Image (cartoon, rainbow, N blue to C red; front, side, top):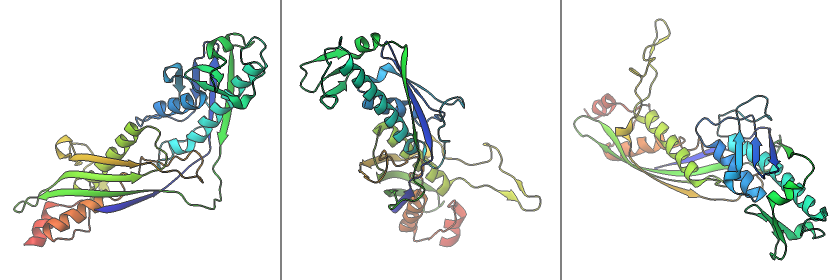
Length: 307
């Protein structure tokens, strides 16, 4: 087994949210989705804060004309953009509530704002005595849409540090004659702040663990020292793990609340790789008694040490 620890990185991020008369919502940010689920996450954040169904929301990303967003790297996209999206959605929700309480045609006219909730596309009092669909409220507004913008900037100096933590347990099998190593089972647990989407978070952790298997047992850049040229510069020569190398994965997501971290989100994209190579090396040592300190672990290292 091995432990994992990875810091929380955040950068300044902007987000804009528009709502039209038909209550359709557009979330805009200049960040991108490289397959990690950013589209889904931003839609979820906006839907939960605004109190509207998820399928009413469209997310637009990946254009420099949109509000500034973070680049993908260092597991900081979701942690950076969450405060901006939630704040923009909160501002928009407040505008909608204000419209309702001052509109004499609304059944919510005159109700204190703190007694109003928005849920499932319905704006209503907490006790359900007065309500109306958001679409009806918006249809009476004078403009075609409402738009709010928010910017989240992390403090340069903080009194508290923030980290994600994990523990990885690995089962390996080592062929006693050939020295071949197979990872057969991985069980990992991670405390990584607020989990917005458990399915996407699990996929991120599994992806990190796959990277770690490649680091521990497969991947290495071979350089010709005479000319400084990379020899294995193609997927035909550079060894990477494939489906047949994959073990069974069990991932425990430990939700935690960090009151000192805006948005409460800690990145999941990197911490899955931290510690997995060490856990595999420890498992190989437990199986063979041979301590390997250079990666990747190779057949000749195990056979040579044994011989």
